[in-house]
Length: 497
Image (spheres, helix red, strand yellow):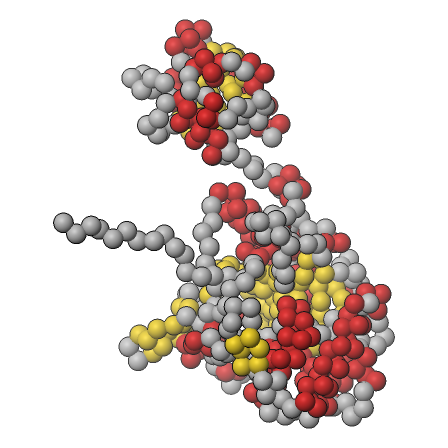
């Protein structure tokens, strides 16, 4: 007989399983953000996970990946792709329904997106986003609202104002600099933008390589460069170097009369001046908000997605983030967005200038999990259910009476459904992170009581508990109460956690 080949329980690279409190926390922060978006007057919509590939377009930073960074397949005559963001589907949705929608149209959406790009710390190939957009207006107030909405949402998720920053820049200023350098080829301009967008992660040396012939990373993968000449590279690096010095000087961020040393350069294009005026306008209005010290000018911000046309912004955490091994990692942004005035026009003759923001829920989740006070502030129970240990399956009525008493009062609880004895039941409760277990045996039945073991006070390891006598040996960790007092005692234990 041929032995059955066992499958390996491996995940594809860049994908992750999640469980338990991590998902509870994710649901909680999602609901907080949704309520805040609704508070600002945004209407929820939903679009399919798949779109016709042609409708999505090719806007992703990782052009070297298959299918320009998306996952796709051929369905009859059409190529279908999993959506890589929620913005391109929004442009399609608005164009199909614009006669029925108000203008401006304010919408929000939450959902998964997929990107066929190289994974990294906190960087997945499937992740959840929640977006808010305003379609159909050029008014700078829409740009201002997006930055304030992003800051306010992070604040309401439990981040103090000193723990995050919203960096703001303008694509027109960056492209104005490229005019000054003498680069007019559109493909090159986009490729340069994508290279400079990696500055925070790769540093000046990495960006220099990407502007030239290319770069090989630690894994040995080679990314082809833009292919600029040395003089062009030197001018762009000069721009980055000088603006980075400004970027690090936080006192110059807020309400600065000059937005970058670039204005000292010669032969600046009108495009740069246009971007500069837009920035001055947005910061003038931001000064009126409670988040004026969190929203700052950052001239080296460019963002890598192609469709941005003007003001852009990005949210970064100001505290160190550690991975599961306790190592500090390069974390990147938790959200961002900007103005995209030409995306809808790919579908419609009716121009619809737009601006939007996107929050990466999975990445924000990683950051928030570093903060212990979030669980307390939002009353998230960071523990499992109360476990009712089972000794006698011939008479289940008392067990269900205890279970119903707990559940009817909103206490997460369960009767042990496994096949093991007391040792297995204690090990199970341990792994479920249960705050307490309940013992109801022959002695308790005779006296009308229950025994409660507080697993966070004087708890023995599950390996040491083999018999009922072991269970009863540590009096400081347990108490016996009348059945009618069970709920009060359990609530005390939960409150103490």
